[in-house]
Amino acid sequence: MSTQVNLENTQAQMRKGILELVILSVLARNDAYASDIINELKKAQLIVVEGTLYPLLTRLKNGGLLTYRWEESTLGPPRKYYAITEEGRQFLQQLKKTWEELNQAVKQISNQQ
Figure 1 (cartoon, rainbow, N blue to C red):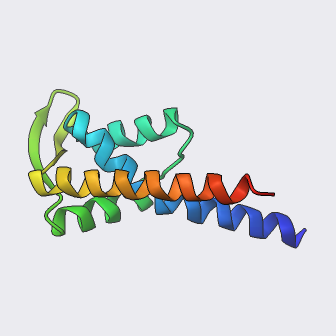
Figure 2 (figure 1 turned 90 degrees about the horizontal axis):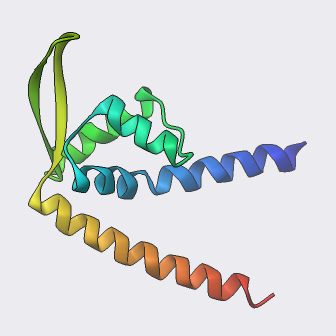
C-alpha cells in the first residue's frame, strides 16, 4: 500500500515539475483564457485544477514571462486572457532544451539496466 502512495506522489511531483513548460508552450501558440489552458492540459492527460493553475499563472506573470488582458465576454463577466512575453519565449526555449537533455539522460540511464 505505501508503494502505491509513494508512486502517486512521485507521479504528481513529476507532472507539477513540467507545468511551466507546458503552460508556456500552450501560450506560445495562442493567447488563452485559464479554462482554455486547463482544457489543453486535460487533452494531454495532465489534469490540473484552477487552484493549481492560477497561482502558477500569477507567478509566471510576476516573473515577466506572461502578461494578460481583459476581454468582454457575451457569456458573462470579462475574461482574463494570458499571453507569453518575449522573455517568456526565451525562457520556454531554455526549458525545452533542459527537458530534452533530461529526457535523453533518463533514457540513457534507464536503458542501461
